[in-house]
Length: 474
Image 1: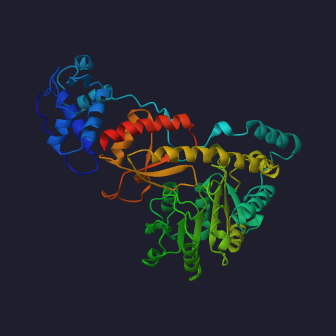
Image 2 (image 1 turned 60 degrees about the vertical axis):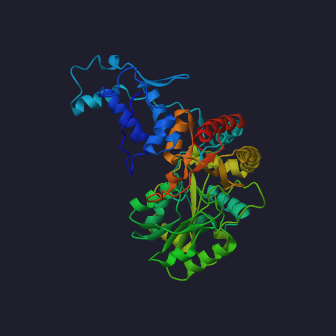
Image 3 (image 1 turned 90 degrees about the vertical axis):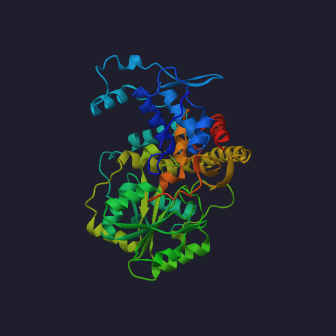
């Protein structure tokens, strides 16, 4: 057994990847011969002053790519690679040869068996027959189905949405204030044009990064504000020029924080203190709350027409629907009709009319009530299971939404844990993936475990994989 000389460096490349690449190069260059035994994971971890989990992950990658093999009770040994180079003449001294060898031995993509996506819904529970019936009604009863609707969307649909928002979220608006569009990203781009370019925007961090990227590419100056357990800290709005704030007060994604009334009022007071200030309220996951009464929207308390409300049918009906809506303050809706009503509606007429029928018939409300029961059962099951795990340090964001935020005890980095789980066919998501800017090394490893698209059996199987990884790495 030969000692391995591996120089680890701090930087963007993870420690496990540096170990994996160093051993891989030594094997390819013949510095470690066929049949030679590698140091045990415990010994190498001690020599390199890293966690054993990190070395386990590097060795697992080498095993999956066929560089080494594990022999029960004996350790890890270098495989015979001669067949891999049969088509390559001469030694691999050029960059081209190195790239070719790498391409030949690239590991096949992992097969994901269980996906803890925080955006997935339970499609098996969707009322397909009812949905087909409403679509047939649209085709059979409406003669002008091929006629394009208004730029803002079909008027009957906007009336229906306005009625729903008033009763479900306390939103006060007329149909004329509602714009229907193909996803929040499109509506956000449209909003930037309505507001005028060059806006200075503050966002929560971590946040919904698609919105962040849209605002940046639309020419807005975006910076992050400080957050605590109640959401965005309003004091951070005074540290530079700001005229737009993007928040998710009812269930902040991804943290899951609920903004209390006092903080909401503070935010509304900030908006009315100067002309031209606005609050974008992304009412994320507002339909699914499992304890207590629904949290009212921020817009419901707006007396000065400063809140721009965003909602979507992605979770309540289906992400494939690609239908969202935006509620503008009255003066901004007037600006839209004066300057931007030349836009064509981005949602097909038939789809708008089908959703309208789905809501007016009571099918939408019945579907939501059923899904609340389904998701609550999954939420409670996952929460109970997590509380029994020794590697769970803290659970946040419970009682609402379709994911839980889980701070874990882990000897590796978040990136390494996600990669290790993926190698075992389980996709989990990390908090760092939703952060703007550099990530502090002191941040605890925190996972987002979505439960909407998984059965209890799949949740158990996914947790069992995490048990194996975190019990070994803690």
